[in-house]
Image (tube, rainbow, N blue to C red; front, side):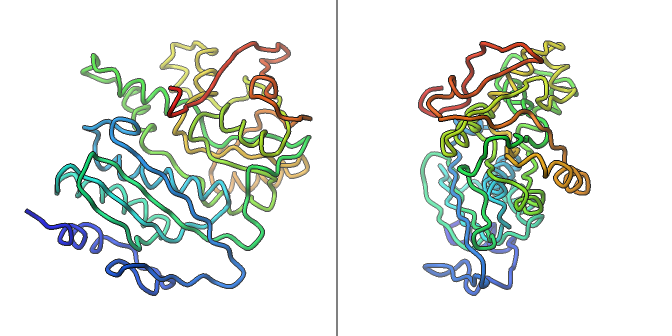
Length: 330
C-alpha cells in the first residue's frame, strides 16, 4: 500500500507546473513565492464534498477539473491572473486509480492557466477536496462586489442554466441510456470555462463583478447588497442555449427560471457603465466569449432580494419568487 508521501510524489509532484516565481514549493512546511512590485495577491478557497458538490461515483477526471475550475472562476471575478494553488485532499483510502483520474483533470486545467501546486495536505476520512488558489492583480485594480453604480449595464458571460439541467440528468437514476443532448448538458455541468482572460482584459471597464456559483439571482443579490442598489432584469435577454431549450421541450419560462437559479455555472456577472459597451463587445469578440446585457442597475437602497430585483419579460412585470443555492436552506 502506498504511503502518504509516496502518493504526493507520484501524483502531485511529478505532474506539477513549474513557475519561476515559486522559490520553494512542495516538500517543506511552507511554500515561498515572490510577488512582483505593484501587485496584490488575490486568494480564494473552496471545499467540494462528495455527496454535496459531486456524486460519490463521479468520474474523478471531471471532479479534478471542476474542483480547480470553481476556484479559478473566483479569481476571474476579481480580474486576477492565477498563479499558485494549494490542495487539501481527504480520502477514505489511498485509491490510486481515483487519484490518477483526479490529477488528470486537475493538472490538465492547471497547465492551461500556468498554475503551480505549491503545497497542501492529504488525510484519511470522507472524500472531500479543499483548494486555495492565489493570483495577482495590479494594486487597486481588483474588481469587487461593491462597486456597482446606478445606470450600469448588467452583464452575464456564456450561457446559464445548462449546469442545473446537467445535474438533473445526473441525479435521474432511472435513466440508463442518455441521449446526445443529455450527455452534452451533463458535460457542461462538470466542464465550465473560467473567464480568466476576459476578466483581465475588461476589469478596467467594469465597476463590479462576481462569478455565478449559487445562481444568478442570488449572486447578483450580493452585488446589490454590497453596492446598496437595485436591479431591473429583462429575463428574455438571459443567454439560453439551444440545448437547454430543447431539454425543457421549448418551455421558455422553465428555461428562464432555471437560468436565474442554476448554480455552479462559473460564468461571470458584472456591471459596467453604458459608455463601455462597445469596448466590452470588441474584447469579448476577440477572445471568442459570449457576453449578454440582461438589465441595468437602478436606485436602491437595498433591503431584500425580492424588493430590489425587478424581473420583466418584455413590458410585463413578473411575480416570480426565486432563490439560488444555499447549503443550509436547500
